[in-house]
Amino acid sequence: MKESKGMTESRSVKSIQIFPEDTNHHNTMFGGKLIAEIDEIAAIAAMRHSGNSVVTASIDSVDFIQPIRTGEVLSLVSFVTYAGTSSMEICVKVVSEDNINQNKHLAAYSFLTFVALDENGKKVKVPAIYPETEDEKWFYETAKDRVNLRHERRDESKRTLEFMSTKLYI
Ligand SMILES: CC(C)(COP(=O)(O)OP(=O)(O)OC[C@H]1O[C@@H](n2cnc3c(N)ncnc32)[C@H](O)[C@@H]1OP(=O)(O)O)[C@@H](O)C(=O)NCCC(=O)NCCS
Image (cartoon, rainbow, N blue to C red):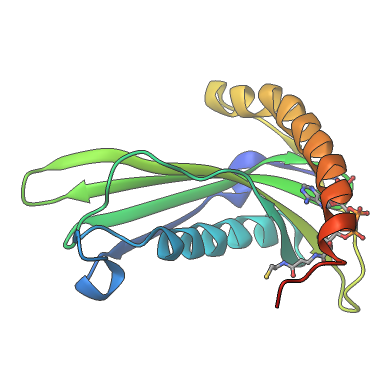
């Protein structure tokens, strides 16, 4: 395993066209379908960086900035922006393109955390990461704050879990 890798090495890109079955009665894409696409492209970046299989530990809020309509082409780009011991933060940007009107817009973005696992499903160390471009430096320098916020949220979530796990409501 390499000791460290550049952010660019994990960069992963996918384009898809939006069809009627991907959309609701407003002819805009289902949020859940978009989240599934975001999760998949983020996992590919995490696997590229870690060289192992990975699981999604958490998805930060997904900001749906503009509706995505039938016929538009969606491009998703993902890259690792932070590497901890076994966890990685991935940024996914979603750009939607209306080829008839020649418009492109930022449709959504999200940060996700993945954990690398070995062949026995045990957490495994991931390579460190280093930024190379000015944009990558911004992601790298702001990552610590996002990671700290996630730790705080996780502590809070553990307290909620204690309560919820005794009351399944099913
Ligand atoms: C994610 C998972 C592997 C973490 O296991 P764990 O024993 O709780 O691990 P730890 O507390 O030691 O955390 C391991 C790393 O993940 C990070 N992490 C764990 N849960 C996290 C969360 N909810 N958000 C962000 N980071 C998280 C920790 O900070 C730690 O990072 P580091 O190794 O870089 O320091 C485990 O909870 C799991 O398997 N969850 C289910 C995953 C899954 O099935 N995903 C698909 C959903 S359908």
